[in-house]
Image (cartoon, rainbow, N blue to C red):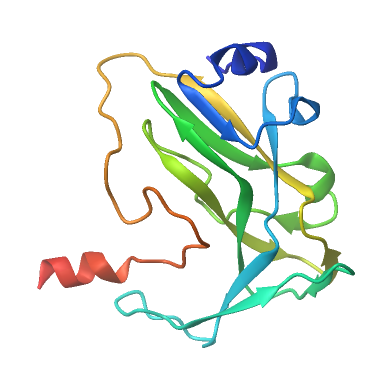
Length: 175
């Protein structure tokens, strides 16, 4: 079951935290999250799953920045979220998608107990100018049936910055 907008609001500061919260961003069954003022790009064209891939941070100026197809941009939500007893999920807004912009490659699924900022895997089908603090995606919540195992660790828990892939840590753990 997906929570309604009014139910999201009722659960604020209980099993849902959205900081900062602005009621104008509340939808019938989701909440719009905004884009932070920076992006991260990988420096190399060929990425290695088993190694740390160097990145570069790009500030989004007031006049916006043009994103190019064929390049992955990592962004971050302006809002920090905490979710207990629910499964948070992230999707792009339809108005953003209709411009050919995707906000996640395959990582729109959160874990019960996740705390932090959402890292967005932004790509576009044609050049597009984007702006900081735009409502870029929406979070919604599923109820969980059965015993809960809360996400209490991991590579991305409690993050503060845009997080590049840390898959390489899994390779090192197997050695």
